[in-house]
Length: 378
Image (cartoon, rainbow, N blue to C red; front, side, top):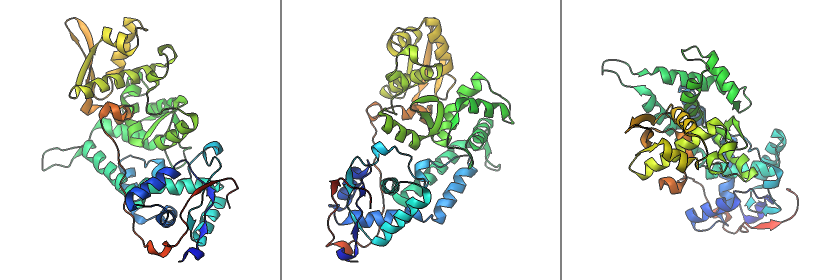
């Protein structure tokens, strides 16, 4: 196809557009020639579900997991104010692809720039190979952790705790659910669970973070009692201008935090110290009151929060020299706590990898992409 057989997309550029172009330049040395071709390929992958995706989802479902929303072919839920801002993406693509994307927008009731954003995010997430690989990595990791090996002649078994968490995950999020659940609904699920436990404070504390990790859910950035997919929470946080990774304790006075936010903040604070000191750390009541909670709560309140924090994986309490301590083993803490640690806390960075194929020489004479201002999506 020659340049004369392509057309400029000329739709509102999504917030991820610069990151998309930068990723292409890092991979291929330039974006003008390749941006349109890669967008077409990402669109076809996004539109046409592959059998490998179904198999990966079936495996996750069998393990009581749910694929993250951004790994599914859902149109991003965005506010108009962050969708384009007047900037245009005039990358050139085949007219048939532009027509197909327009038709899909009409079919789903989404704006055209939302479809463009979904396709760009699909590419940035690694495309089909990246998404399926991530699902399989989750499944392998989950199976390895959950299956406890018995003697060689016997079949591996699943622990009672993991059975409870798998049951909760499968009943809290179903194909008919609205995409989120409340803290109250989590309690109702505990009460309905066909295992010992019930809707008690101990059960809520012991299982909530683990179930959120299993589902890849987190608290809504503007409502700590509502849990939504992590990717959806990130979009809400972008809209609200909130740092989703920061625990509430880092941005809210102690008196305005609910009990769960105080407990989570305590776990994060101790996890940071554990990571800085070889994986283990312990804090006494007085140190927690002064250093974590700025001297605000009474010692009795701090001791209660320490007991609550110790109910999660990776945390225990003990007494040394007559003083109560909260201890942390960083290797055992949940993903929910780890997500609240910044790259500076952990010294880790993430780098998405991707594999794409296609013929790029067919658009060597195409007009390079550019961003302009004004006009409606054509």
